[in-house]
Length: 438
Image 1 (cartoon, rainbow, N blue to C red):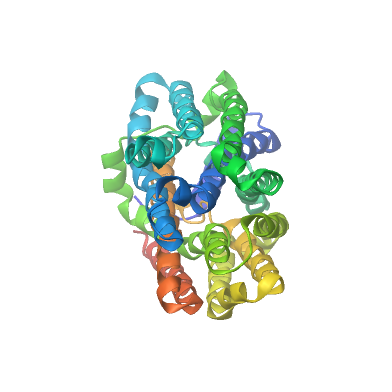
Image 2: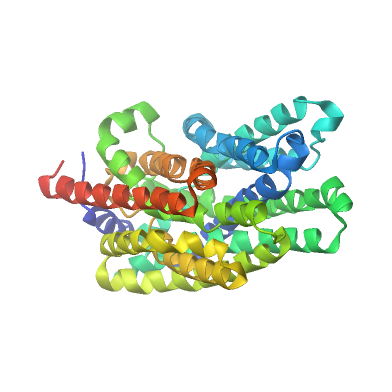
């Protein structure tokens, strides 16, 4: 059932031959809004996992242990996400894409805003930990259901010779979400007293996340469930298929697609969540200044993501992904140690890291998924996305902090290097599968 990467290009021609009048820029707007909303939720929780939850939920533990516990809760959403995909794909098949998105985004918004009302452990005891774990699992289930198929639809409608450019547009949501989340937390942490921030100030970004989810829901419903777009999904065979059947028929492609972007997703957390935890725990610097540094890095990331589209259209997406994995491997050998180099070292680490992340992350989505057969593309892409984030990012902050706290920052570099090796092996395996036609 495995097909070559030309499948999606062929299907795009067929789709257009049916007279579908599609503006890829219009689709891109919906995709960017949706991704920005999801990543804003993601980073609001991630930042709170470092500077709020260890103190709120694990006051009896030392700061390092409390943060490790917090990162354990952080991973729950990635574990729950594939189950959410399976659940909501069943909703999609039974009641349609509109019902699926509405329920999923309502669940995401509700679970996110519920965290804003979380009592401290000294108020209700260990129940506070269980409440946060439940909300985090609900977020993961909702993220699985929030898969709307707009990204593969955008790829199918991209103009010839500009597929790399349009592939990078959804990825802009990550740095945009990080910028807004970092600015919000930096503002409240920097302008409030410590007592006020830990009492009520940290809760406001979660309220903002709920409001953004409402806006994103209407933007995505407009793109995904109107009659015009329903016809486009049908013409492109972007319809939900049974999960077990999809895994049985497209298992090799899903496996390769899971590990192909591993270097990118490992680096994703190495320049977002992990450095904040290291600086916060092991230097005299507070969170506020480093959140500003992260904002600067994310702006560099936006530029790099945009550049990745131009580069990929010239050299090919898989070539760019392989080259960036090799560059990340070099980066892993020296860059983590820069986090002990004061503000100059931190800024250098973040700028270089986000530049590399932008180039690789900009093309990491769908570099392998285009080989899926028509009937399974919608479901297989969703499953691949879930497992790529689970294996590449779900445990990255926990693993990197645990290793570096015991063996130094060089161990965090070794962890990142292992992701690069997995990416290069997966890309080589994918090439052999395509050459062998299976």
